[in-house]
Image (cartoon, rainbow, N blue to C red; front, side):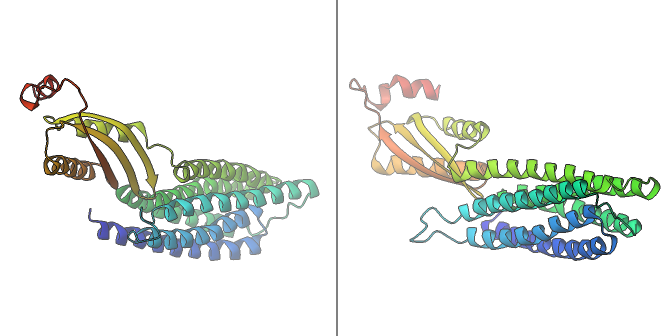
Length: 310
């Protein structure tokens, strides 16, 4: 997928996310105020935050797709990572508010819920909309390797489960006189939201602190390098990190010291292109080093090269 095509796809997905969140938030707030259900209002607050987060994602993705400049020589990919971290913090705040309000209602005995049927309808519609947008965002996020879109997809997927639990509770309330179920359900939803927010924050902080990429990515780099034999003798000091959709990596490459500068340069260029083709978003820098064997027999008689070619 071309970079421009991926950028357009990511921005389109972010716009759809904003529109969906806005529609759901308005619908839930109206029904939540009419019914007095904390469960529906809690879901409305979550959708309101979805709007904020989807907007942040849109701005971050647009900024992250800008080319490198004099102030950001490695590009702007970490704007996307920053958006993921902000999303985790805001989700935590929403979970904290719902938890506080649920405990307050349980302590005060404020269990009034009415017009339950409207709440059931709005939560059912919300589940359907969240399911559709979550699948779409996850597909685009994986296709473009966007951490912000994958975080947004996780948030909407979380809405499916939380709204499902709230929906089941409201249905029970329609047949059983147990109004305390509404704040109790909201309490468990708040705990779940806080758990997911912690997971998002952990992943975002790994990228912000330049943690190494997963072992499967590093092993793929080594495999691709080892496919190119001949003058290539060794690879070491492999370092990797993520910046938004970019996978930044660099390593030292030991080659025969009898190669010309042009030959060593061409070999490094070839490896960089091969890795970029196979690993989406790879940005590779190679430092070429000459073999320092004091007893170098020359290219024709080098045992290391012959063993690698055979």
